[in-house]
Length: 79
Image (cartoon, rainbow, N blue to C red; front, side):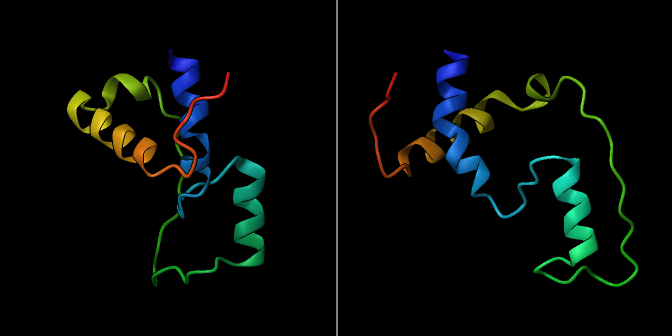
């Protein structure tokens, strides 16, 4: 089920304005400039997220997934 949910939510996640695919995309964005200017005196940093999914509150996580799934253009699940 997790794989099906991940696949169905993939388009929504990728289209999120804050989505960054990987380190290369992040470095290219910094080098080429962001489409939205960064605030003055901003400090950029990165960190590795450990156990991301268990840290998401269940109720809010389920509501976010439900909203994303309901906003899909195609409402059926393709196997």
